[in-house]
Image (cartoon, rainbow, N blue to C red; front, side):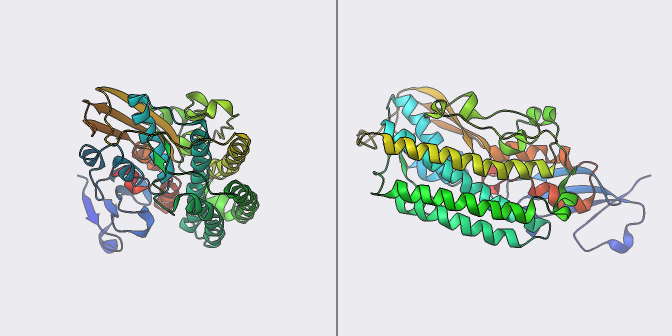
Length: 382
């Protein structure tokens, strides 16, 4: 008869014998990127089963959407993935604009795209710097934060915020771009592109990094599609899908969207996709800045009613957020607040694949696999 013993980290070592062991990682543990709990079943050093247990941070964002008007829900939307605040806002305003028939000015469309791509780079720099820490390399995070500060300076100048920008409005943006701001953005792009090369040289061809990530935590293309995985994690498994190219919103159909993919689907491929996306987004941001500079002067928003009500109906707006597909399903009954707003967050779907990735892996590789999933816990516990 088989027996099972449940222990916490560091206890029970003298009683293991030949038993299976159930090990709890988290919710309060430095390897879990926040309050995520993993329940591991171990056969010696090998992981036989994994159960991700979520909900420790649940804030009920979807219910809070229902008691706030269409201007107020923007402040909630930019907080579930706090590394992608501007991108989160876009999904909400797109949904409301479709319901109300409001058309934002062309300058607002291109400015949204520029800021969204800068926000994407900010997100990816955080993970590009923090993931090596999981494997023992502390230096890249200092370089990554240096580049983040360069971008944060221009983002703060235009919006007044460093993390929760609150710059989108239904019908456009909060206010016009500061004088000379586009020139400062172009210089920031040049500086960050150069600095990102330094981060890449530190880690990308490091033999220790390769030993810890190559062939580890493989997610097949079929499994990625079955679990609804999206973003850099899905593209690292060969799932060639990007909403900016495949179902364009804003004015992405007017740009050539480079979609970064790999086929191996391991931890190394996921990291490489993330890093290469930094350069692709910097190129897109540069193209948006050039287009904005060429546009004639004009408004950055349109006048909306003091009390904004969406007509009765429903719509779904999804965007390619930094971590994957982000969607808002909006149902209105003609009031100033949504009757229902369902959030489809990237991290929530992506972490569902963790059992598939970790099953059969060694316990020593658990942290490398978990870190390579690039999730935000607030985006899971929405």
